[in-house]
Image (cartoon, rainbow, N blue to C red):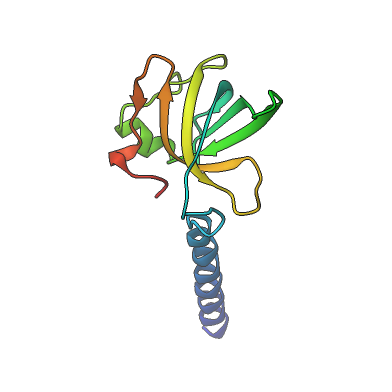
Amino acid sequence: MKGTLGATIALAVISLVCAGIALAHHGTANYDMTKLTTIKGTVTDFQFINPHVEIFIDAKDDKGNVQKWQAETNSPNLLHRAGWTKDSLKPGDVVTATGNRAKDGSNLMRLDKIVLSDGKELPLANGSNIQ
């Protein structure tokens, strides 16, 4: 009986610690939420996977140098409900992506909006960003 109670308490503590880590993953602390950055470039990879869909884009800076960007957005489940599929973007697609850049200045953004070269905007789940 004593061993079972101890194991139950240990499991509860581990669950609470893991839940805190999981919730921290979904925060915006990593991003500068005070301003948006817009890039135009070519999709090099599109990963329609959990926990967040990732879009990799090659964009040119002011001097014409290629910069590799990573845009993180909602989960595949939320984007699927908004009409996305694993084929929504393909390598070679030209897109304009707008989002909140990482505070450390790296080429990572929390996607707020993505527009295809034909002007079509791909909706983010219910008009929202990462949940």
